[in-house]
Amino acid sequence: MQVEEQRIAVEKPKITGKILVILFYMQLVLVALLAVVLTVRGFISTRGDFRPLDWYPPMLTAVALSGATGFTWQIIIHCNPSSAIKLAFWLGPLITCAMGVLLLCIGLGPGLGCGVLSIVVAVVQSLYACWASPRFKHAVAVLTVSTVGSPLRLILLTTFGVVVSVGYSGLLVAGIGGATATGTWVDRLFIAVILLSMAWTLQVIRNVLQVAVSRVRHVHFSFEDKMDSYTALKDVFRHSMGAVCSGSILVPAVSLVRGSARAVQLISGDSDEFLFSCADCYSGVASSLVSCANRWGFVHVGVYGKGIVLASADTWHMFRTAVMEELIDCDLTSSFCFYCGVAGGALSALAGGTWSLVVHKDYATEICVYSFLVGYFMSRVSIAWPQACVSAYHVAFVENPQSARFDATIPVRLEQLHRNQP
Image (cartoon, rainbow, N blue to C red; front, side, top):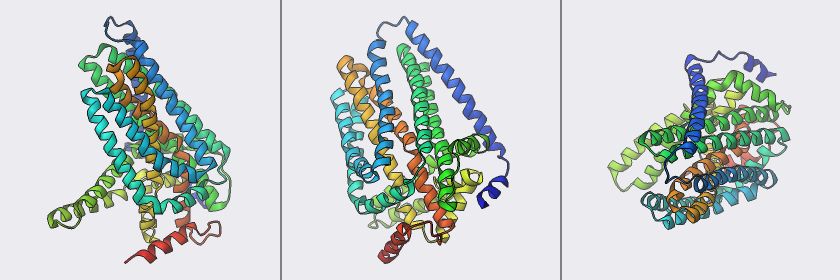
């Protein structure tokens, strides 16, 4: 098979990738040990104003709920992709707004700011959902055709990733509680380190799943062949962890820059020549960065064992050569996954924050924030497999668009986009 030949001819991981892998595993162990130490210290602390029975139950309940929400997203996407997309885009802003109202009800200084921000984000989400609604039909078609026939093992693989993420997040949250118990400036620094570690670790777990799943689905779309899911996962740990660790930093950073560039371009309009020029320049920089790190590159990371930069550049070059760049830009999968993450985070924040507001108001704001972060990343981990399926479908198509294995979903959409061009 062509895939296997290219997979064997992979270059050895570069030194930067090896260093990142070492750093990742070191921080994983050290932060876990730090969390254990902080938890134990928090329980034996003599500070009298910390009430663990008012802090831990709401927070740990929110962590458990985030895992349950992740499983729920998996079931809905597997059973009814159309309902999943509509639910994420219409229910997500409502839950986010409810979280904002809760934070305003808490009434404390930081909570007020977070509450206003949440309501603004909910309004922006609603406006974007209305603007993007004409694209829902194609998004549903792509999600359906790319996930149909997914082996049960792929879903179980993602489920295992969610379980691991829940356990690890619970440990880190316990450590945050221990740091909150003493509340010195050093403890606040520890909390920041734990949150950063959690974000990177859950991103790595999500992208490990993305690489493994996209390889399995790419083999299916390209050759109508089956590949063992656990073999794909083993190969990720053996050969691609450097690309996954670096991609877990680069891809979100580039996505943030690209998203902000689009927002700036929409705000600037064309009324002010100077602002339009600056926005156009910023947009050009963002467009060049996306060819260096994008989520489509994870497919080539898994299939061919490339580094994330080379894989991203190659996949983006293929999209550009096939005149598919506009279709990729219009793809709603990333937005759908983001909405799922925000909805999951807001739901966890509502559960933890409401409980905390009832039992101990002073903890409510921080528990809301921590719960949201855990819920967001947990939902993103849980929907790694449909995102990987969509990525693999597009990459396999652009590699061989004439293959009889693909239906008319992408060609019809391309024809519509070309017809609507001025």
